[in-house]
Length: 392
Image (cartoon, rainbow, N blue to C red; front, top):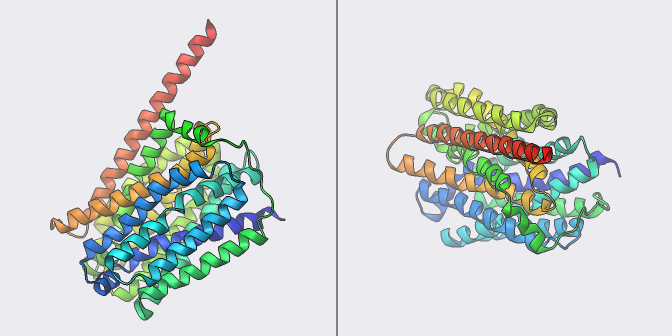
């Protein structure tokens, strides 16, 4: 089977996951009204999903370590389908909260295993290319899936949006079973072997970069709908178009940064975090000027290529615990999701205005950069120590 079709089978899962993760952010007012809570309280549904990812990624990586990767992926895709179906039929706020948590559990493990599969079938020298192309499913979700589901939610109710995601989940299951074909399982490890990743300081530092630095994007994106309507003065019907703009930035970022990450993963991470802070500040300023806010919104989307950079970095520092490290990458980003949504809701509730989440995002991006600089310093220290021992 052609490599591009096999990567596409993996990317369909990313499309389904991205749509399911991000569509509530564009429908917070509708969901809040339906389940009779405030918009900041509805934002906790985003955090519930993210917490599910944080918990599910390491647990499923450990328990799935001995499984063939293709079979594991199919099982995760089925679990994603079930979680979104439960979200669509949840009768109230707390049952919806539980359904969003369950839907998040397979998220990190799916992306982690899919990244490893993509890298293994693409071969050395094209790992970041394969990961960024697989992650394009997530990016394209924000161009097509999220805006379409948001439109469905605004016109036919938010439950219709989740049902549309269930359809894509079913397509993902079918593609994995029919198109993906046999895949290398790499070095099979035990649960104890996968847990070995947690002993590496560089693994933890890389995860910290994602959890803190990427939280800046979610501080903005979690409240994009009320920011655009209340601060920029745009109509609610324009929100799906704004989501297309953000998603287009994600696609452009992944296409552009893939080859640079393969050449210099650390340097790419530095630049992306700096740009993320600049773009978030630009959005905070431009959001007071209507449609002008779309320019920095596109640029913020392009900086999400940081996810592919940290995924590649984890492959380099995790040793044989590849499944755990790859899954934890998405656990870290959803820690950022939960953190960004939480801090954004806090500053809004405190009366600091609708631009406040973007400024929170600037601070988080700079904090992520600081962690990366620590990681670089530790790497140089360890390299120097290794060289010194080699001389003796």
